[in-house]
Length: 512
Length: 70
Image (cartoon, rainbow over all chains, first blue to last red):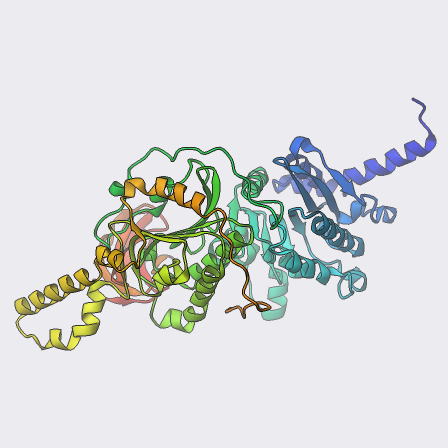
């Protein structure tokens, strides 16, 4: 082959671009346990193969190869996807005008081709020196967020956070369906610790204020905490495998796997309504082994939300966790459930509710926090979801807890009860106190008083007996725990063709 | 100072650990009664308890200090 001088020039240009930023930044990156952007992409894409656009962006500037962002298309787990990935060795991954234009263009490509879009974020934010070219204009950074909002529910949008996501840039994760954060390295914040000290006088570390662990356990801005970058990429692949390429398609189905070997539901679920048990153990008995992908595990753990497969088909599980805070619903758990239900519903993933809930929390703390409007979010999301909804009353489902967990009034396709189910406005103790408190207090003899209370408990329990509720057709079936898995397999198949047309309106007014 | 805070509002049902006892992460330090449920409060750290701030029957709010560790 003859090597022409113009080929040499091209090769030289390309190799400069592929090298990224100065070597001192590569060294710093390695010290932090971070991978170079092109190594991340090689690991993400099948066989490390991808097609890149506009690699020459800002190449004439000399020190800004690819303008600090790689935008590419390629297959991940056999599914074609679009990707934008910051290069933190180039001006700390900051955004110039071409960076922003490249991100906008890959969003447009994802929209036109109806493909999932992954955001591999590691960026210091806007280049303030270039602000007029990239911040306020029509195709400035704001357009990225505008596009994200428009694309939400149209295609899956996934954020992998490897480093900072600062100031305005922090809205990229905020508008994604899921945010996977690398422990120790990922961070999100509107104002850096340095800015916080200067502007409001607060002294705080980055990890405390915007670290991955904080966001995954306290703020709820992060969904999954990854041990390292390789783990984050693995997680993104597992997550993506649950989703169709866009809302026009159905989620992929794989071969069924038997549930994990373990104790039976009869052994796991205590009959005493007030005794805690571990809902994870119960979930394991219902789903295909090894398929659980939990979302927001560390946040509001009194409600478990996660993707799984039953008989090879994807389902979204919303389950109360009696082991944590008694499974009571709080402000954060309501938020958590609402977002998860909305995610599943957007991409045709059926919902399975496993209820064991004493209700929404009461008391000054939560009332002042607005638990009513937060609870309304969860109920609205559940209520407006049109995917198949299976409601299983595992044990108690009291008060608005029954509503939040897709109780009969919210048109679940079926409401199944285990023999341990107990549905009521409130539990027997609270109800008897509420109705007969004057009478109870008026009985002076303690023995007599106890006998009276016990008698009322028994009456109340009879009133809310699950067979009575089945007789009134409030629950559709009572299922022995040992048959629940098979029942779910059968039911999911029955409702596969479910279709509910959207009501004639523009959109509901979201309770927020 | 290392402390264990209450995760929710409720009444102290039982206090399972005493001053001077060594606990490890995950040990049930006390049980709250709230929303008619028994809520075990597990230690989020390992260490020796130097002070127990509550007695059985006390009302605690979310964020109140339950015990202090060395």
